Image (cartoon, rainbow, N blue to C red; front, top):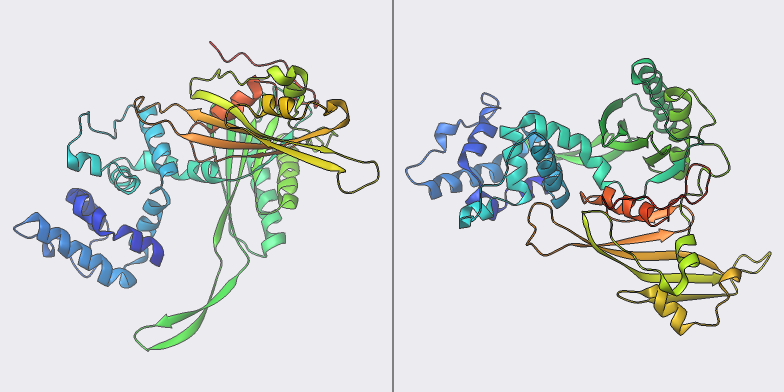
Amino acid sequence: MNREMQQFTAKTFFRTVELRLLRQLLERHEGRLQRSWGYFECPDEITTRHALLTFFIESRETFPRELLDDLHRINMLSTDGGREILFELANEVGTALCPPEPWSHYEEARLTPRHIALKVFIDYPGVFADALKRMPFRSSDRPAEFIGEDEQVEVNLDESLSDFTEAAHAHYRAIYQGEYCTVEHYEDGGALHLLLGHGKKPISRLAVDEERNEAYPLCFREVAHDTMVFVPETGRIFIKARTDGEKRCLADLFASTLLRRPMFFQHAGSRELYTPRPILNAGREFLMRPCHQGIHAAFVTYLHVSKMVAYQPRPEWTVGMYDRTNAVRRMYDDCPNIRWNEVALDQVDFQFILNDRRHPNAPRKRRTVKLKFPNVLIYDRSTCQADAILQELAAHGFANDTKGHRPDAIDLCD
C-alpha cells in the first residue's frame, strides 16, 4: 500500500487534479479522518493543493481502512490498461470521459490514467465497479486454453453456479488451506467471464508499531484472482491460475459443474489449439492481410524451425529467422534447402499495428504476439484490441476447431 500511496501523492497529480474530486473522496470518510475539508480551503488554489498534498503524505499511515481501500481500488485502474477499460465501458453507457477537443493544457493533463480513474470512481461508481471486474481478465498473461468436444454449448448458471462455487471453494481450501473464496461473473461479447477470488498461503512479516517503537510479527494472506473465459460458440475456455495443474483442475470443475459434462475438456485434441498449416500450405507467398477493423497492419517477424530425430530429446538442428515485415519469405529465400515435410515449425512471432478507435490520428500502437505450437500464445492482454488479435489469428486459419482440425478462414471483412 505504501507504493500505491507514493504514486497517488505525486506532485504532478496534485497540481492538476480536480479539487472537487479530492473533496468528495475525503467527504466519503468524514468523521474518520483527522481533518475535514474546511481545514484545507485557502484563499488561493495553489495553497489548497499544497495543504492537501502535505496531509496525504504525512497522514497516510493513519488513514482509516475504508479510505485505504478506496485508494487501492483507484490505483488498480490507474494504468494504461485500466484507462482503456474505463473508456470502453463509458462508451457502452453513452458517457464521455474526455472533454471535446481541442483541449486546454489543464484538460490534457487530466487525461492520465490516475485522473481518469479518480473521476470515474467519484462520478460513475457503477462503471468503476464493472471495470474492476474486467481488470484481472485484461492483465492475465498466458492463460491456458482448452478446446471442448463440442461447439454451440449452453451454460445454465441459474441451476449450476452454486455447485461451481462450492466446488471452487473446496478446490482452493485443499490447495491453500483457507476459507476465503468469491465467484463473480458477467457476460461480454457472447463469452462467460468468471472471476474467482481466493487467499494465497499465509505469509509472515515483521511490522512496526510506531507508538511503542517496536517490531512485531504480522501474519496475513494476500488475495489472488483466477479468471475463466468460456466461449460457448467455439467450446473454448481460457483459464488463468498460478500453475498448469490448477488450470487443468479448474477446467474440469467447470465441465463437471457448469456444463454437467465431466469429460468435455478431456479428449485427445483439447490442447491442440494452434496449427502452422497456413504458412506451410502457402509457403513463400504467405501474407497477413488484416480483416478486423481494430488491426491496421500485421506482419510475421520471426520463424523458428527445428529438425527432430527419433528417440532424441534435443533437435538435430534449429534455425531462427528475423525480418521486420516478412520472416516467411526471408526464411524461404535464405534457407531454400529446408525440406518442410521433415521439420517442425515451432514458433511464429507476429507484429500487429493497432488502430486507436478513440483517436484515429494518434500514433498507432504495436503489439508483438508469440505463437508456440501447439498451445502457447503470448501477448499483452491488457489492450482492448486483444479480442481483435485472437480473431485475426483465427481468420488466417491458425486456430484449430473443437476436433483439433484447422477450420476454414473466418470471414471478418464485412
